[in-house]
Image 1 (cartoon, rainbow, N blue to C red):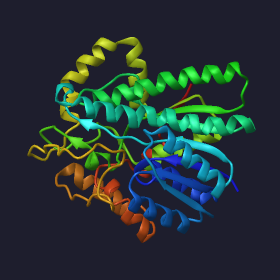
Image 2 (cartoon, rainbow, N blue to C red):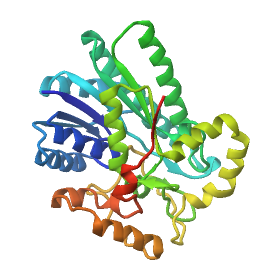
Image 3 (spheres, rainbow, N blue to C red):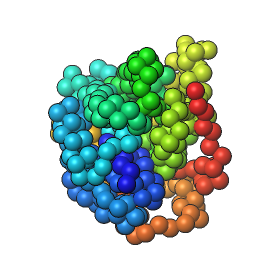
Length: 339
C-alpha cells in the first residue's frame, strides 16, 4: 500500500487532495489542528475507499511535532511516498495593524510549516532514495498583494527555500522530486476562518477556482515530479509581470487589490484576540452564506448543474461552495504551465 501525508489536510485544498488519493486507494496521513475536522475528514476518506487513514492534531510550526507525526505515520501506515505541505494561516490587515505576534505566527505556520514538513519527509525519503515532496505556493510568491503582507512574505520564503533545496538534491544526486505548485485565488474556508481587520469580509481575488482544481494540479506534481507548476492564467501573468513590469503591477495592486479582496457586504468585521492558528475555525466549518446579486445567482446555477456527491462530503465542503467557482468546462480548460 502507498502512503501520502498532507498537512492542512482537514479542509479546503488539503482535503480535496486527500480525496483524490483516497479514490486511488492510498493510505493517507493528515496533519491539522482541529481534531473534530480531522475526524470528519478521516470518515469521509474511508467512505471514498481509502484503506486506512491516520490523523494527528499537531502544530506544523513546531518541528518536533511534525517529526513525531511522521514517525507515527510510517509506523501505522507504510513508508511515506508523497508529502504535501499545505498548512496555512493569514491575517487580513494593513501591515501596521498587524501585531508582531500575528506576523510571526503567520510566518511560522506558512513558511516554517513547509520547512518542517519538508525536513521530516526528506529525512525518511533520503534513506530509501525515492519519494516526492510538494510545497503549495501561490502567484503571490512572485508578486505580492496588499493587506496580506505576512502571508505573501511567507510564500516568497517558501519559494526561495524550495529552489535552494532543489539545487542541493541535484548536487547530491538524490532521486527525490521537490515541486512547488503556484495557485490562483481558490474558494476555501480560510476567508471565513482568518483574522480580519478590513472594513468588509475578505474574499479571494478573482478569478476564483474550486479546491478540486488546485488538488488535481498538486497530485499531478507529485506524480510527475515537475519542478514548478502554475495553475491558471492569472498565476502565470503574475509570474511574467513580476519580471517584465513589476512597477506597473504594484500600481495595479494599489488601485484594485483592496476592493478585489473584500466582499460586497457592509460592516467592519473586527478581529478578536484569539490565537492565530492554521486552519482555526468552528469544528464543523463555517455555515454556508447565501449571497444575493448576479454573481451569487451565477454561482447557484453552476452548483445546481454540478453532479452531487455523498451527503457527508456535501456537509464537509459546505463552506467551500458559498463563493463563486468555475464551471466544469472552465476547469477542464484550465491552463497548467510547468517550468
